[in-house]
Image 1 (cartoon, rainbow, N blue to C red):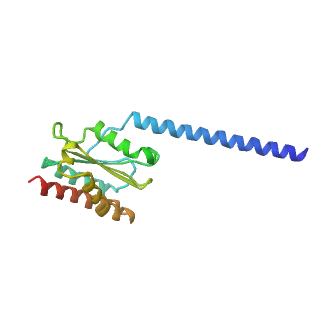
Image 2: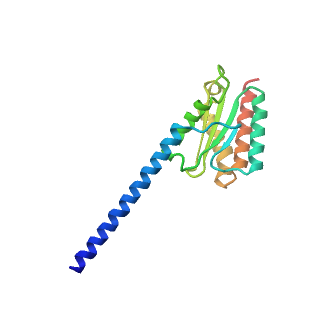
Image 3: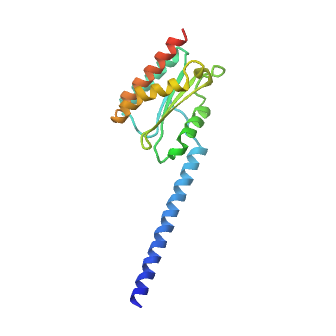
Length: 178
């Protein structure tokens, strides 16, 4: 009888833990859906929702993008997303959704470049507007990610990698749009 009671208690405890886990998974799914449905507004060119950069790094990157955007070759923006805001498999889709919702790029020129970074999932995505794709191919964008962003990111140097990648993208644009 004692063993039956002990087994019953263990089963009840396991069921309770499963219900609690299921509840947390449902809460997380609801949060992810709410974030997807109600995107935050863009503030400046760098939106560091994952707190990847220091205050001075944010200021420097935002100023650099404002300066780069003045030449009208492209309109750069960066968004960092915490892994709690998006699952790894939805990151690419969310980045594209943000690019479209925020209207990165000049109307009619489609010259937007949104750089999405998620350090938790170890992902980066660059969404180029149609006007940019005519100048820099997706394959070339991948080369910039692989050679300029990723090496520094792997060392935890997000500012340095972002700066190097931004400058390389702008260098490619200037060389091809003159």
